[in-house]
Image (spheres, rainbow, N blue to C red):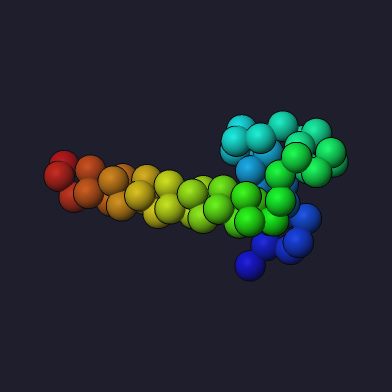
Amino acid sequence: MPDDEDYLRRPVQAGFIPYTALKDGSIDLADIARMNDWIDIKADNDARIARWEREQE
């Protein structure tokens, strides 16, 4: 599991929000949690697609 700072930075790294949004309070922890869920779901979906594509070769 990522540490607390990684959890906060993941939405920034993924391009969902600017870093300043973490600093100015324009988003809350629920927003960050939701974005982290989206990141995890996308990674899972991408892995499933890649596995399916390999199986089709």
